[in-house]
Image (cartoon, rainbow, N blue to C red; front, side, top):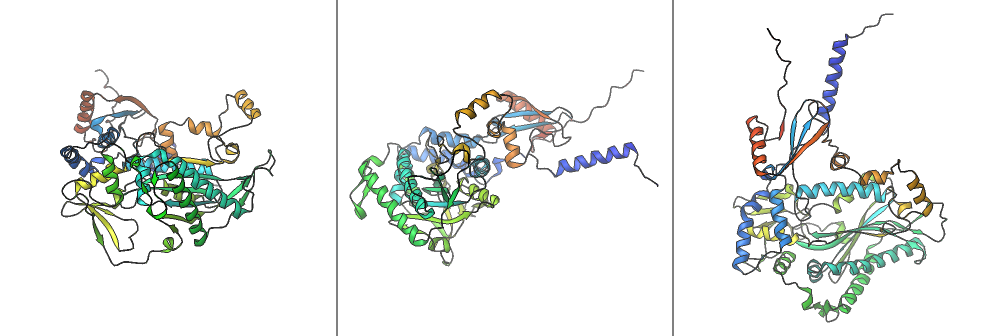
Amino acid sequence: MLCLTAPEGRATTRAAGAAATALAAAPTYARHVPERTLLYAPVQAHYPDFIARLAAEDRSLPEYVREEFDEYLRCGVLEHGFLRVVCEQCHAERLLAFSCKKRGFCPSCGARRMAESARRLAEEVFGPRPVRQWVLSFPHPLRFLFASKPEVIGPVLGIVHRVIAGWLADQAGVERDSAQCGAVTLIQRFGSALNLNVHFHMLWLDGVYEEKVEQPQRKPRLHRARAPTSAQLTHLADRIANRVCRHLARKGWLEGEDESAFLSERAGSDDAMDALRMSSITYRIATGKHAGRKVATLQVLPDDAGALERAAGKVGGFSLHAGVAAQAHESQKLERLCRYITRPAISDKRLSISPQGRVRYQLKTPWKNGTTHIEFEPIEFIAKLAALVPPPRAHLTRFHGVFAPNATLRAQLTPSGRGKRPAIDAESTEASTDQCTPDERRRAMSWAQRLKRVFGIDVTTCIYCGGAVRIVASIEEPAAIRAILDHFERHGALEQAHYRPRPRGPPAAAA
């Protein structure tokens, strides 16, 4: 028997080559260059003009809106600070720019938050269960009310939750007193045309649990509910509209009755945002000599409205959709659905600049009248972005039913096990301090670990040699920033912010 064996050196070379090939095929970290995006350029160029125009009209932006724009202009820009990381083996250096982490209109931070939130909802909250998306939109006056007074949203969302939960219990054949529903609501503030449109994206378990029948040792069983018909959606929309309007009238936010109802004077605020909000809601120009006019649009021949419009329940400006669902085995579809409802307000891919210098934004789905694009003057575009900024401490993600923070069944039903636990479980957890639950490990994740989990990018591994990368320093002083950037620029590595020094040989032997 003849056996052929490669020499040791050749085998080592092949192994190293295979490792390098695998390293090259893996996703690698690439610096985000916001200075070259289509969104950054008009904001940087025309935001000061927008502030000056408001000042000429004796108006000013609130501090939280100014901070949103200022932080966005600094997001991902190396000149405003970065982390310096170095490989412990080959000594390659990398610069990681600071991000703004804002919730308004930053596409980079919004996309990262979308991916992380979607993965968390799909894996740690819902798990392998059937989920249906319910979308509820409101008439223009209520959109303005919710945008200017975020504290009104909570009670309204409670009404919506009770109506849908009761209907699910009836469809599943479970008594309402014992029915346990589960839902996660994402309060979106934007429409497809960058307009201010406060509406609810709700992911509901497509069924209910019956708490009284099940024993504590066993997991509750989900009783499925049938998909709602168009007539049922219309009926639910009518009930929601009546209850919401009665509640708002009782609290003094609405005046009048039925079709003659209108917002009270309490609905407005004292800052300059009211004019921006109302203009954004109604697709109008907010400032300048053309204030109040409709924004420009690009249209084609009208097409069919689509099945989604036909399957919606519409009553008095309220619209309720429930046509999209993911079954228990459709984990990828569920995550796509979660990504859709947690998406950022603006997409760079749908943004363009016309030959006349106007900002053009493509609609995801054409309107019934054939409108495909919305065009803004640059300052009008800045006004639209300002209206989308949520006020501080406004909670845009809400958990209901079995997913609520204090729900009894949350720890039992969620894959992460997060929530209340019986006293015996708490004692056993305290006794075994050396063992961490999956939920505890997720909460203890560093930013690098979470980035690897969400995007498949390991920033702690060197892209050249695969060695461990460690953080050297956080650079925030202007002089130090300039010195390091000049060093990278001299070596032609400033573009990718990744510098690999030349290998150094051993010192020459003394003669």
